[in-house]
Structures are given as structure tokens and as C-alpha cells.
Image (cartoon, rainbow, N blue to C red; front, top):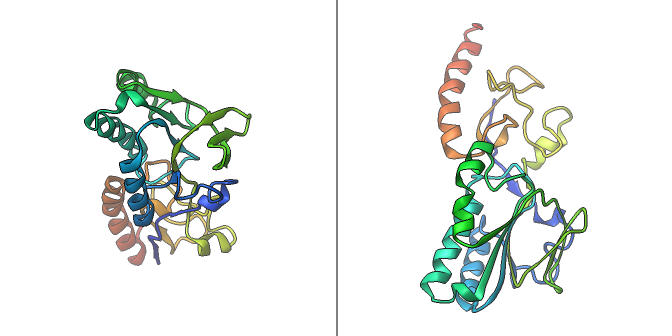
Length: 223
């Protein structure tokens, strides 16, 4: 059996995130509905504070939130209102990028574009009415428009099988063979796994080459 169940958004697990202000001034862009409503909100936006927040890692395509930050900068610049808009990037990581080497080399791109960086920000709750993003240690980042990258989890049925998934519902996977750590005849690939690699299409591509060979070997009784 090959588990390729991907990942799902769980915005309801962050206090207040789907409460007052949800899809009015709090949006995600990982769903069609969220992205469509965010586009409409951006078109109406004239001035104020835009905050982009990664609630927790891992997420699908780790660079996507940064791409959005740069696109927002370009969008407001094109409309001639960039000086009326502040952009803040709030992340639970200790740098803007997932890899320390990238953060060291590329953080200047945010600085040059006037994008404020709030690091080690572990989101505790969202107050949509007050326009406040609050961390577990009570740091507060005010917003007029919040772009959230919600908590990601594995498929619900994985969480329901004891020993199959980790705390977030991603399959506990041997990173060398892509076999489940629960049963050797279960394999996993892509976002469904807990392997220490990005949840990205390129990762699935290269995992598939390993998976195909290992499934063949398993069926043939080979190591």
C-alpha cells in the first residue's frame, strides 16, 4: 500500500483564526475560495498594515509565503500606494527562510523592499475584531489585513490509526526506504510523510524514483 494523502489545512486549530474577521480581513491563499476572496480584498485595500503569518511548520511549499510577500510589495508599488502600506512577515522560524544559509544570504531582499521581519513568532491566537495577531509569549502584531498560512496536518484517518502518524498526522516514515515505521508493507510519499524535507513537488519527484525501486524490491523479497 502506498500512502500519498498529502496534507490539509487546519485553521480551526488556531484560537480565533476562523472567528470574527475570517475571510473579511483574515485570509489564506492555499484554497481557491481563500485566494479569490484575498484577491478581492487586496483590490479594495488602500492603506494600512498587511501581515503575513506562518502559524507553524511544516507547510506546503515553504517559500510560498515569501513569494506572496514579494508579490504584495510589487502589487502595491504598481498601484502607487506602497508608501501607504506596511508589510510584516511573521514566522515561527529564527529567519525568513527555512534554511539558515538562505536566511543569511537572502534576508536583505526583505530589508530592501521594506518588509518587516518578526522571527520566532509562535502564533497563539488571532483577534479579528481588534486586528491583532498574538504569540504565545504575548507579543502582538497589529494588522488591517492578515494573510495566514494555517497549521497543516496529515489526513484524518492517519491520525486515527495508532502508531501510523506523528502528532500532526504525517506518516512516520523511514527516510531511507520510504516505508512506514508501523508496517513494512506500507509506503508513503510526498506531503503525507514526516521525512525532514520540504513538502514540495520537487521532493515528490525524487522520492518517486526511490519508491518505485523499493516497492519492486519489497515485492521480490529483496533488501
